[in-house]
Image 1 (cartoon, rainbow, N blue to C red):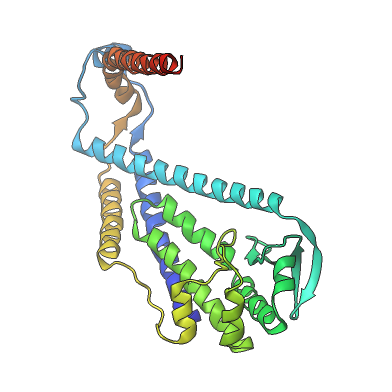
Image 2 (image 1 turned 180 degrees about the vertical axis):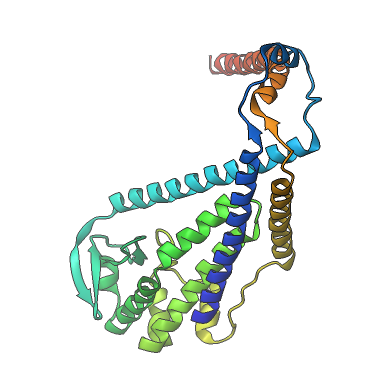
Length: 316
């Protein structure tokens, strides 16, 4: 199981690396084809008077598409990182830390919480957390099995691995299989940690300990028992990657298409897109759309106002 989770993790990194290479190639080639030198004023005025974009060639469309894809990946990746960091900080502020203790041969952070909880958290410096409720409710063998489970997550740095896989899945939206890979890696990491606990303490101790937990951990560690984990502990079901072949094939095709377009654009040195020209060609479109947007907003707010007045009359 450890090998299966490891291979799935490296598959995630491999697909992510291909997606990042495609993104960098698309962004670099697209930005290199963008010209920031404005044309003459007379030409800009003439362009602004057009409602359509007749000068936007097929090559220019490719430049815009690749540049948009690259910028979108950068934005989504940064947002994913910031969201995960913010969630980690919020979760940390909610914990009532009671100090460090040694349990089953490992240093753990003890939480003042009557609920049974145990998890591994932390990106750069992961640590094992155990609640007083779990310490008091579990027997010695059960507690040892839980700590062995979390110690495996600690040794493998699973919180960081899972966070990286999720970030790649959110950022590289044109590689949809990455989201499924991240989800599946989380499941297989749990099964791998279960195997480590079984080798150290035995399946009965781990199974009885898992029945005491009923929720989920903060990031990667599912502390409650699931049907797949129960089947795995009973030896009734072997682990599977469970990755849709069609989604995997589509993701590879999408990455290949982006790389091919980027290489084609890089080899076509005479294809450029003047940013100032594009902006001026779009200005009349924006001016024409503005009255429509104002009218639509007025209709929407008038309906909303009538709805509020109707509800007020009903209350009266």
